[in-house]
Length: 118
Image 1 (spheres, rainbow, N blue to C red):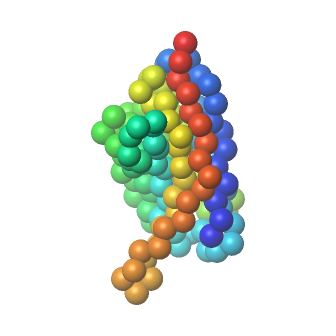
Image 2 (image 1 turned 90 degrees about the horizontal axis):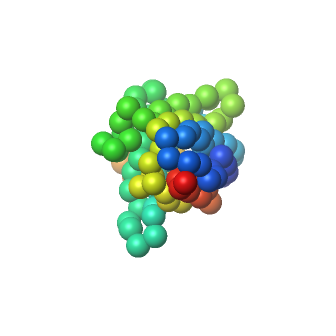
């Protein structure tokens, strides 16, 4: 599966952004999808995930501010980010994952930069 992330940019603290990740090349609905982020000097961390059945989970600091959703008809996963803080600044990566015969397969998009600054 190929992933193309978009929607990053520069936003002031308290602002909003919506990230999109378009998938192609496989059966999108069968994949769990997630957003990860990596700030300079930090390890990549999981921000939000949505399973193939629509269950979601979030990084504690993202709860109540971020919402992950998916549109299987459009092969797209979204991350709505509200009340952004400077500490949300990072490169955000889209992930698709699937288990086949007990083996997890992960696919990554190219990343999109989110900068929260006044």
